[in-house]
Image 1 (cartoon, helix red, strand yellow):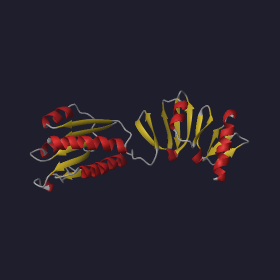
Image 2: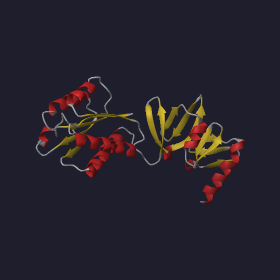
Image 3: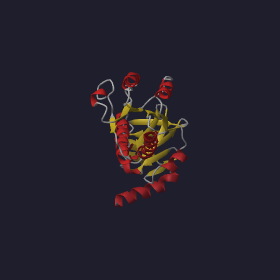
Amino acid sequence: MISLYAYIPKPDEKRLLEREFHEAAARYTEEQWQYCFEGKLESLRSRLSQSPEVDLLSWDVTGMTIPELEAVRRDYPQAYLLVLADQRVSPMSYLRPTVLPSALLIRPFSEQQTGEVLKELIEGYLRSTGRESSGPSLLVETRDGRQRIPYTRILFAEAREKKLYIHTDSGEYGFYETIEHLAEKLPATFVRSHRSYIVNMDRADGYDAELSAVRVGDQLVPVSRNCRKAIREFVKVHERG
């Protein structure tokens, strides 16, 4: 879940930012988002008084709002901040450590400029939190929250102790899912090798007929009798390729 809280008093800009944030969130993430767009400072103040999780902030610094923003930044120093301003506001008032914006929109700004700035803002946030996309990926819900796992990092999947475990180069991710459902979501390079295993054949180093197992790095993934033919055929196709 990614949460955004925004103070945007001008109705036309509020509509623009709402639309562009929704489009950017759908384009660059697969996360669920929680939005709070407020046109009145007291309304946003009320929402923030409940101490919610805040990942992204958007704030119009025209008027006498910078002291309020500085107070919010003390509560949420890690939040990525988009500042809206115009040329009447001195940059010295918001380009300071107590505000520390991550991105700026200076009036007048167009729809295209807004989209480009939001892209940079969201991608920066995703990189800083390790949620950036590295090509096609699998999104799973673990006890540590939603995790995006690029397909290229997955070695194999294992059903164990009523859970599924995704084995990667850097460790494993456990979550609740059926192996049948997972198999439907994965691309064709992931092949069922056993009732409890799915192998990423792009990461396989070969098939050991004597052990009836697929070699993946330093691990051996079992191949059942029923799956043996499919695994052998896949290995042959890759060897010819």
